[in-house]
Length: 149
Image 1 (spheres, rainbow, N blue to C red):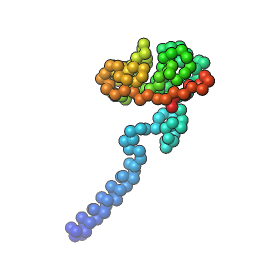
Image 2 (cartoon, one colour):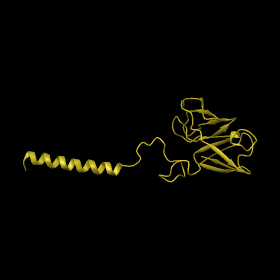
Image 3 (tube, rainbow, N blue to C red):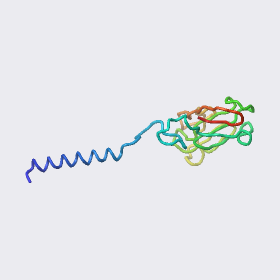
Image 4 (cartoon, rainbow, N blue to C red):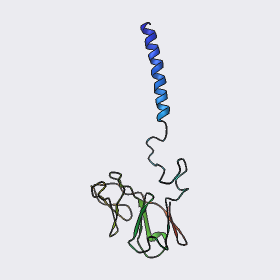
């Protein structure tokens, strides 16, 4: 085989391998807005609730909270109106750990990451090392059903 034929065949082989590799790795890539938990892939966010809560028996007292479905839901006031609640992502913006709880209205990133970041109920940073606020979600209430979108 001559050098020219060898290099030509290698170039074609390399092109096929690269094309096949790109097709195999195709997909969403580094999507900055991944589908939320429980949202089927390709379903636009907002079509499915992130969390649904029955206010007759969940988060019933001021200061109570629930961490579920990728959401931290905190009751801030006694009435059943959206302003009486805060809903933010349950993923710490510093290291990506799931937030561990709420203590006196402060959302804590606990022992899973061990860095001690804390966030205010509105998602803003209270104590670092986290520097970015938590994503805040929309709350809707119909009767005794609270929905986080």
